[in-house]
Length: 61
Ligand SMILES: [Zn+2]
Image (cartoon, rainbow, N blue to C red; front, side):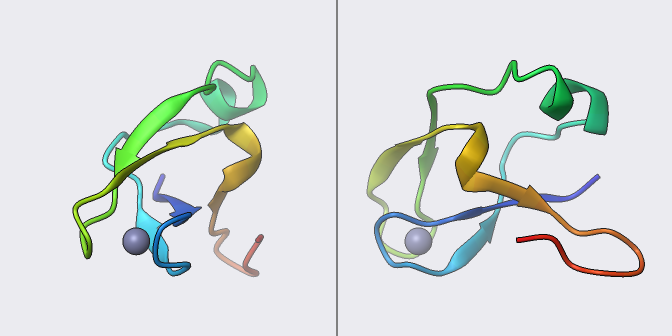
């Protein structure tokens, strides 16, 4: 499942470098992940609330 995060550096959405399942997101195991912005190369910390995923029928932001 493709998971995106809203970049704290450039403000755009990026595809998460880590693959998650719906279950792993629901169980809130995703906390304090550090993702590097592919545009600026700067890293920032992201929590579960910063992540979102796209359903087949509608987008969840
Ligand atoms: Zn970025």
